[in-house]
Amino acid sequence: MHTALNTGAPKRLKQLRSALDVRGRRLTAAVNLLEQARVVRSGRNGFTAICTDPVTALARAMDVAASGERVDRSRIEMARGYAEARECRRRNLLAYFGEEVAQPCGNCDNCAETADRPTPVARPAVPVDTPVEHREFGSGVVISGESDRVTVLFDDYGYRTLSADVIRQTRVLERR
Image (cartoon, rainbow, N blue to C red):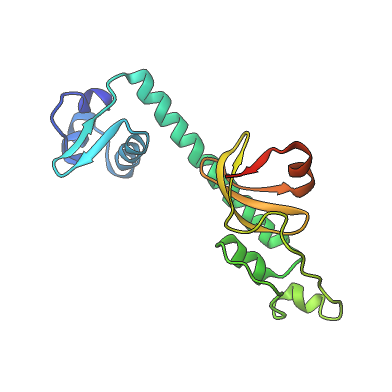
């Protein structure tokens, strides 16, 4: 694909299909990945190569693909966490979308199970919507939390739930 884009003039998808003999979604996915990796640029007249070194282009594309896979895996883990949750499912689901709800809903299956027991609502260890920086995962934003843990959406690593004790002891997570 790199040679087909490396002639200077922008190429339309139709021209790339002919030059590369690649069809449909496979070509579109490859071009989208190259654009996300800043290897090609899209314009009104088509796609133009902006990175001419194939080794660098491949490394960038692989980094973007790996980041996407990490985020996808973290989404699956968040869905699993929802399915296995013992606390209010409404609060859990709204937290995923960045909404903080003070009290359990009282209507979901988990609230029904615990209706006869008072559910203490603790303040999160780190407030929701706090921008943070993690030593390994980089930049992120706190999307939910309890007194003992926080869930952060990291730009390149997706969702991670972190222990408040570990955060305090190691200072692995800092507010930005």
